[in-house]
Image 1 (cartoon, rainbow, N blue to C red):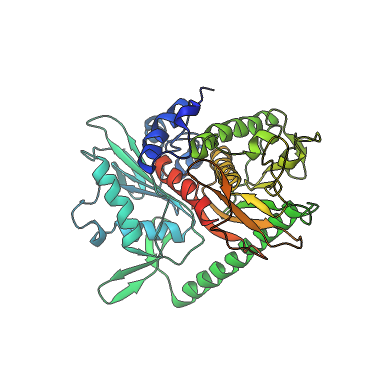
Image 2: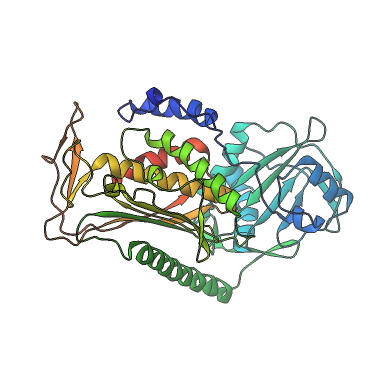
Length: 433
């Protein structure tokens, strides 16, 4: 793997340089935008093919097979006009798909009696048009539908656009028209309006999902924190769980190794080598099987390196976890910080590592949105102190408020959003810690 030069990865670089640097370094590191990658859509299902990219050949095969519209497949001959897009049927179609478990809307296919009969041409489709589609799914639907994947297929004279609508746990998604609102849903090839009882059931399902998501994070966090010497030094615990886990074949050892390799490349882009990366203290080349997971075990085992002990896991359902000692790091060649003292740069590097791990794991397991929890566990007698660095690189605690307990931070991230957007999420997350 070609990696960015260390001189390009200094964490003290200005924000604008970080953004420019990301595009170059991510390309050098083999970064992915994730659009057009491995997926399993209604087109794959009706053709009985394995997960793979959504291609023009796949669409041709579906049309030639006269594939019929279903709950998760909708044929459209023309794109909606970009002007006044929120007032067209596009938001309703997206909301109906999201309320029905997700699906694909394909523009540029003629149909008769629900069955595809031939290809058409949707005309020009540029970045402005694509941005308008994504914007309408957010501004004209409540709650918004995020994570649309837009595929441009075919050449001039045979152009089509496929919009993948993800399954959602935030339903019911409502459409507002003037003073009225409704919740559309797919009924085979038709879009209909939910009855009051259906809306009630979807709200109940949403609240149940939130409770289950919290329980999943609680279990992951407690498991990752168990057995750590938190009375001797502070530990950073970070866990992430996909909001809608996609249970595919579990990753092989080689695939887990590839995930860790990609994680390393992304993490160095996100935070550089200005601090201690937990990734440097785990066995990335030989992940070991654990209980429904692969474990990158700690390699900092000798007396001189135990201060940077780290453990990392990739679960078969796409969840990830990181446990790394952040208190008591080496302050100089002959001294260490106290167990309650945490160098802020080590937090930044740890967050960069876990955000990179989420990104790489999401690609490998076909997941998208993740619930994330990050905390610092410390049970010693002294309050926790976060050490920052001055312009000369020296640590000091003059601006740190002693903490007797660190309240974990929780957020939700879209691990398959455009690379630059995810990079900005990853590089701001450490600062919330």
